[in-house]
Image 1 (cartoon, rainbow, N blue to C red):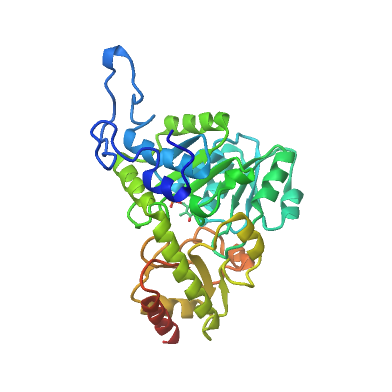
Image 2 (image 1 turned 60 degrees about the vertical axis):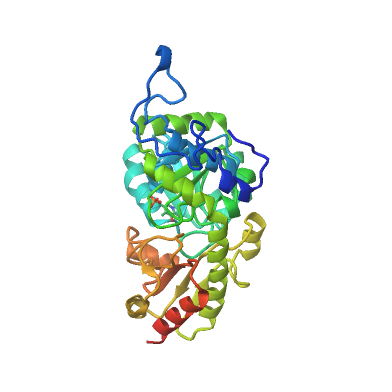
Length: 382
Ligand SMILES: *Cc1c(COP(=O)(O)O)cnc(C)c1O
């Protein structure tokens, strides 16, 4: 593992390995190989590609360095990273998770985990008392997301991790929205951190990837076992793209975040917008807590329009944003949560959580903010 003393911006650029140890090439090559020769009859560092690959090693080292983990793991998707982390639970265990979590995670927790005899209680994790009230004798895990998807509700990571420790639970945090640059759950006492690297870490809407890490060597051993046993690993070319994306995270995120702050304030004043959800806004619930545990507000916000018709009209009229279920790209992405990111969630539950048919999620890209605003305000007017 590389030098841990560098600051995050430096780690992003240089990562664990910033040049090929064999040739000195300025980028780690795409090692497109399924297996590795045993010189002198002995296996080397790499043996068979499911277990490890030099291209994959780069983002794996990067995430461990950035999050303060002992070892990092790269997966074929964020959901594979989440499945890997949840493999730390076993049949008969009970899990507590936020009600307003990423739609794909909701699907995994409600459709796949029960097949393995693992049941989940969904609560409002912003209120630690609700986590406490959901505890059962067999509760073994706490799965968290903060700011949560899509209303940016805030959970107290340290408070939740302390509560989990007192009760012998493992805390797994999906840190996709914040990236390791803005929030470090392991430092707050959480056990495993996962990322959909498809989003900000990759950053260019051109790959599907997941990362995880932990500061506990025994948990790392078990995460590695699952990764090697299933082969849900990040392929060499995608590893190369991810390592390349991570190098520019700081400048991309800062630019997206600056745009998000401006757009959030202007949307708030727009007559067609009922409400804006963004941890950077002064009235946002949990704002102070968020800024204690994270370095800034991030680049994702949500806003509520009158109804589904207003949302459809906006999506048809805007020209710059990609209308799609994703976030964290250099281009602005507009998501209709009801039908896209949270399609897997039953309608009554969405309504209960405040995910209305008029709700839009906006992931601010790095375009000129005035062009974005012209486009959005034009779309809101029509
Ligand atoms: C996208 C996303 C995921 C799933 O990641 P994939 O790379 O699409 O599998 C999980 N959590 C959050 C918060 C996400 O935004």
